[in-house]
Amino acid sequence: MKHLAVIDLGSNSARLTVTRIQDNGAYENVVEKKDPVRLSENMAPENILKQPAIDRTIESLKAFHDIYSQYENVEVKAVATAATRIAKNQKEFIDLVKEKTDIKLEVISGESEARYDYLGVMAKMPVANCIIMDTGGASTELILVHNHIAEHLISIPYGAVNLTESFLDADKVSASELFCLTAKMQNIFNNIIWLNKGRHLPIVALGGSNRTLGKIIRKKVLKQAEVDIQSLRMNLDEAQNIYNTLLNSDLKQRRAIPGVSKERADIIIGGLNPIITLMNLIDSQSIMFSTAGLRNGILSEYLSNNKK
Image 1 (cartoon, rainbow, N blue to C red):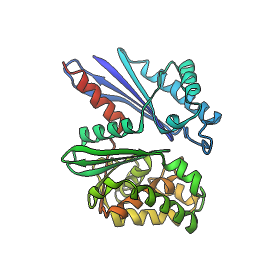
Image 2: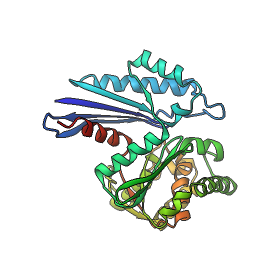
Image 3: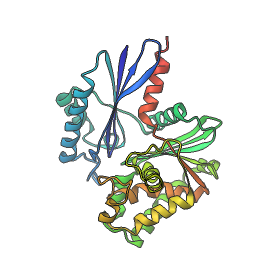
Image 4: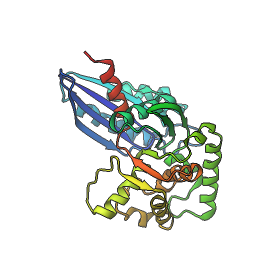
């Protein structure tokens, strides 16, 4: 028996999964933890990780180390994504993490992040034809899937945190702010020519902002404290109605909406703009939510590479 600890250090959240793997190949997750570290906070325009965000992240990673160290025969895979990828002080940050936590972070490319998203989704819900969209804190990954194969993939350097900081008031969004943000995203998507091949396809939604849509609708319908949104479907009208409600709410009101976490309420409008914009652009009528993603993709690759 062995354990695989996977750390996903994103731009908004740090996540840990510890998976117990039996000798016969059977496996189960024994730890799943998330901390809202907001690593990319106030990075722009210098692209420098700021000390408060570094300090929060270090504390979170120390706690992760303490958690997975309790398990025997542990292999650790720790990856850092967009915020660390673009940071001018990347090396200093990586070295500090190693010194303070004994965790060796691997900074992966946007393409690798998208590939892991694809592997994770296919392992949990093998959709034949779709666009996978993972909106993080400082990047968005897009994968066009045809006949179960990733035909195209890309990572763009815009996500919930940096879009909000660049375009929106964190409290009440104005019409002009929303127009400028939407125009920006439309221009980006229009320059990704292969997205035309995804017209009318469903979007498989990953990332905390996108999953918030699913949590809102589930809590509204089921009125449950904890809800599983894996494979939940939502149509365009439902998504736009929820987005309109968020737009018409100030920060205090958004924090009170069931399904919106308090630490995400200030960035949720910026975080959802990419998926709403893309759905309208390619005339996609439905979203399928997945709780899989990068960490699942890393696990899938690990299991494949370690088959007996």
